[in-house]
Image 1 (cartoon, rainbow, N blue to C red):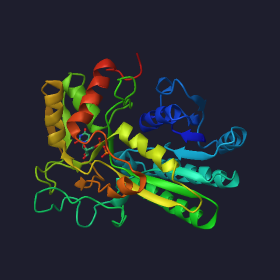
Image 2: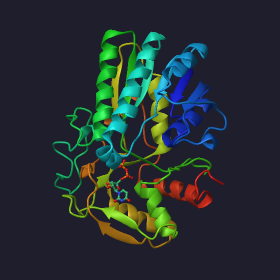
Image 3: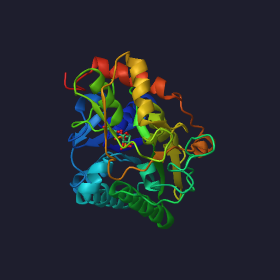
Length: 338
Ligand code: UDP
């Protein structure tokens, strides 16, 4: 298939592009390189551009005879979305809507969208309200979507636009609701590189290696077993594979939405403890206040994607995921900038 991948030089995008190329797809990556890295997509046709330049995108759809779009390009920092909502509504919603309509006008019928567990907000029946075993109750796709931060709001609004388009036009989509993407390609050549880094796992490694003085635990008074936030960490290559499977399933009228996670939650303290095991290093930690917009616990029930797409997580525990992330971190302490 001829596929346009927006944000394809970013973290999840670049891992997906690699798998698309291996499976024989023709890929055009459209990335502003504001957050993405040219070195992350050495084998792809990279077009540098911004989604706000929608005529540029339109031209690519036409000239490259694109058949499907995978739309990663977005801002994805919960905390920043609370303080700068305008940035999020413009980048994540407005530009996505422009892209969607150009897809319609160019007769593109397949669209895969990077959605998020942040669309659930603080789910009823989970979100820190723990089961008798002390673990958060996993979230199914049937859970009410009620975001608690602007990031989640923009993603949910676009999911709704996709559903309306699929109801009215010859168009189908799959929204993949990512839990927490983590880890790096098994061969250590592709991984996470954000500037500035805000994500827990890379920061834990930076603290372990002395690059930063400590990692701050954002909140220790959540209604979770150890008081810190619980998240479901999913390996980036498992996440990438979900996109390939979704593409093969979408037909006009498809309105798919799938959770993608391993179905097990780890607290911030557990992440730090497992990182200490994997690295053999002590992680200096400071306890800090909660970060605005963070629900207490988000754990996926991913049985729907397993059943309907035949997907499964190859990396089904945090230790296996962190081992790949640590390998990348050791060989690329400054990310791609070497
Ligand atoms: N977190 C933390 N300290 C940090 C960064 C993150 O305690 O320096 C927590 C954050 O509150 C959340 C979890 O780690 O509960 C994962 O956050 P991250 O930013 O990695 O991903 P997000 O959940 O925002 O997608």
